[in-house]
Image (cartoon, rainbow, N blue to C red; front, side, top):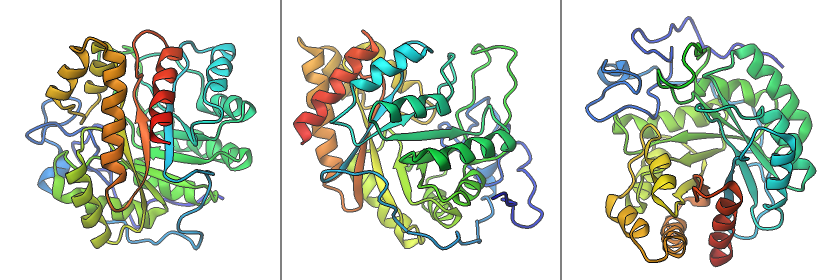
Length: 338
């Protein structure tokens, strides 16, 4: 199932610390600065090459997740890197979340997603697994894909990955052997349902629809629209991406928070800017949990009303109190939406 995922003799873009070919990533800061330091993003001055290879024949929109109406994905993150913690948390998702998104977290030790996928499957969940290029080279990523192809996971989410700040896990060396487009092409050869991510409001905004079409040509059938994008800009982005040839299904990420800490965790993600007034309203409410649920439900309804949005992803820890409290908040949002 192996294949070359770099058409021609493409070289990595000079000056990109993530060694990307098909950039830019979603972490470009205001003014076109790199996510990692003050250097200008090299993809601002000169656009990335386009992915011209079409994906191999296969279903355009694999129905890998049984859903009731719009699909609802929920973030999954155990409080501790133990089998017991993961299994206990997975049991709390059964019956209300169409799929659980197994993320990639750079600031602490987590169980490998292959392990979490097995645990969540055992507990009746449909795992949608994130594959990041930050800490794994293409050989390790290919091995994971071979496992997922045999596990009946709902899907794989192919991302380049956020950079790790110098004070986070000092001494660790990032890999970035691939980027999301090339990882998508490799994942497609395993017959998996593939999603990618895009940030419509992150510079260079004019390249985002084109890059989404490149990811579709590489093999993606879903695109998660990252946090910090409002309904109006989601509609504009989907329309522009479709004009560029992106025949994808779109999932809009809904920020779920019920206290200052959970909001700050989301706001620290590269490329994410939360609405300051909405955040202050939730945090300053007499009942921040109820206010946070109300806000998430309202945002989800706005997103689902956009033509082309087929799913939402409830994103974030939801509560700083505990992982169990966070799941309870997300479940309350889903029950209101259903």
